[in-house]
Length: 341
Image 1: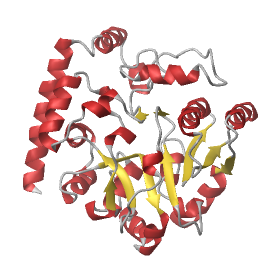
Image 2: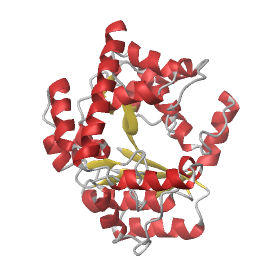
Image 3: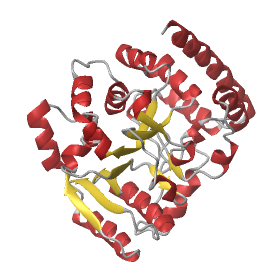
Image 4: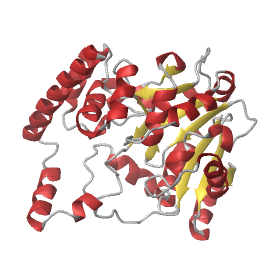
């Protein structure tokens, strides 16, 4: 299985720490072949990443993202996605690996691997094209209620209220080609204008539930942003019929969408894992930075103070109950959408 990371120079440290965590827990997995699709990573950062692979006696194949992206631009006339290329490149595994018919595991850089991924190396694929984790009912409900554009709402409705996260995704390239995956994604991209999560929604539109092998949540654990685990587990168990507690206690791959663990203000309860692996990496001693999103910078001073206070009390019982009420409202909205769909 080929493991593919993307990174610009800005994210090189985070990608490097994620790679180190992968190798630290999977150096004995012989099936893994590593590739880094890099976008102008500096010589210094590239040297540090190479030293990580040397430490574990592994090899990394560096690919130039700009070469791949130029091929894509010529065919699709695309522009940079959110200021970068990685979002688009995620949906072109056949361009990155032409002729390859094995499995390709795509890994976001905002991840930490804290266990063995052997379970992902020998999947029973059948005729499935990809494997990915469905968003939790709460996550999908929030997406529909507060973030999704009109076209994304339609995609979620067409998929029966389900929507998978593409931060950790595996392509079965043999099935991808046999089931005309490229043609289906080309069609999915036709005329799309209002997508918020562009590449992710393209994948959700191109591949229905019959094409997706459900990935266990322990391999894409992003529920750490929920303020009250007990209420989240209760609601998720009720709606999905599964016990989430083992996943919460011992996730294999932790994904940090929205709550980057390299910020001091991160509200992720799993942020400590990032620091654990940072401290055995070439970036040991690198300080956490302050959260400084564009939205935060636009706030007035008094609003900034209240925002920092809000993040400090995010895990308290009061805020947990408030978030639980918001989740309930979003879930009612999601159930209404599903009924009408």
